[in-house]
Image (cartoon, rainbow, N blue to C red; front, side, top):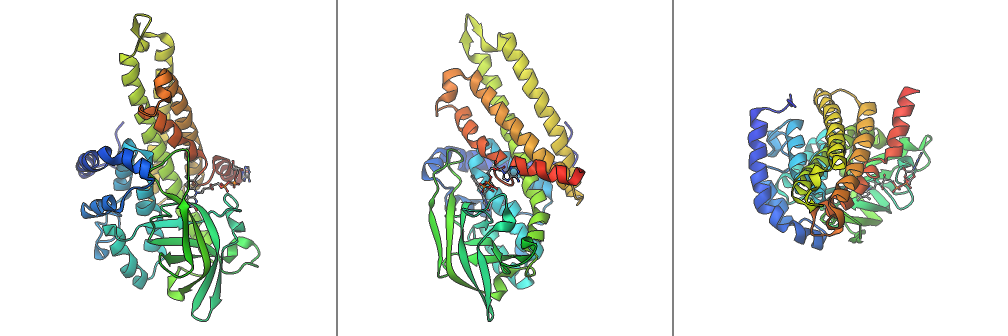
Length: 380
Ligand SMILES: Cc1cc2nc3c(=O)[nH]c(=O)nc-3n(C[C@H](O)[C@H](O)[C@H](O)COP(=O)(O)OP(=O)(O)OC[C@H]3O[C@@H](n4cnc5c(N)ncnc54)[C@H](O)[C@@H]3O)c2cc1C
C-alpha cells in the first residue's frame, strides 16, 4: 500500500533505525525482559542518535520532525518487541504535554534532558481505585502559598520505576462539580521529598517495560511545576488521548503483521503427514483471512494517521481503531500460536512472547469498553 505521508527521508530514517535496533536492542532484548526494564544506557544511545523526541522544536535540541517519524519509530520498535513501548510513551505521549502546555521556562528546563535520555518520563493517571473512571481520582494537590502539597497513589505506571519526571494527574479542587473540572496536571521530579516508587510490578507480558506504583506523601512542588492552567487537566488529557490511542492501533498493527510473518515462515517449514502445514486448506484459509483483516485494519489506520497529521479531531474514529485493531491483534496472536502447535507455547518461540504482550492492548490507554462508550456517546 502506498503510504502517502512517508517520504524518502522517512524511509532513510527507517533503515538507519532498523540497523541501530538490530545492533543495540535485538541482542539485549531477552536480558531486558529478565531485568524488567530497558536500561538507561540504551535510552542514552537513542538520544545520541536523535531518536528521543525528534519532534521537539530545534531550539530545544530536537529535529522538529512530523508524526510520520513517530509512526516509523513505533513500527520499528514494535518489530523488536512490545516491551519498548515505554520509549514511545516518553516520545509521543508524555513529552507532548510539556511541549503543548508547558511555559517557556518549563520547556527550557525539561526538554533538553528528555532528548538526551537524562530525563526519562512517565504519566500518572491511574490509581488503585480509579482507572477508567478518571474523574474519580483521589490524588490531591492542595495549594499552600506558592506551592502545592501532593498526596495520593498511582499504579500501573509505565516507566514509573526509572522515571526522572512524572506528569501527574491530581485534583486541585476535590469538591468540583462536575469532578473533572477539579483536575490539574503537575510535573513531579524524582527525588522530591515524599515521592516514593514502589517495586516493579510483576506482569504477565511486556516484561521489558517497567511498570510501577508511585506514592506521594506530602510532596511539596512549587507552583512553577503546574502544567498549563489549574482546573484544565482533564481537557488537556482528552486533547492528547487521540494521539495515544492512535499509537496503540499503530503498535497493534505492526505487532500483528509481525505475528503473521512469523507464522507464514513457520508453516512453510513445519512438516506433518508427509507435507508442510502450509499445504493444508485450513492453514491457507486462515492465513488468507488474517491477511485480509490486516489489510482492512491497515487501510483504516493509514487514513487516520493522515487525518491526525492534518490536525483533524477524529476521536470517534481513533476510538474505533483502538478497540478494533487491538481485538484483531489479540485474535491473530491466538491463531498464530495455534499454527505453531506445542512450540508456540514455548518461550523460545517469539509468538509466545507476542501472545502475552498483546493481551493488555485492549485494557490500557482506555479500555476497549470505554472506546465503545465514547463512540456511542458521539453517535447517539
Ligand atoms: C501494562 C500496563 C501499563 C499501563 N500504563 C499506564 C500508564 O503509564 N499510566 C497510567 O496512568 N495508567 C497506565 N495503565 C493503566 C490503564 O490505563 C488502566 O488499567 C485502564 O485504564 C483500566 O483501568 P482499571 O485497570 O482501573 O480497570 P477498571 O476501570 O476497574 O475496569 C475494569 C473493567 O470494567 C470495564 N469498565 C469500566 N467502566 C466501564 C463502563 N463505564 N462501561 C463498561 N465497562 C466498563 C473496563 O473496560 C474493564 O474491562 C497501565 C496498565 C497496564 C496493565
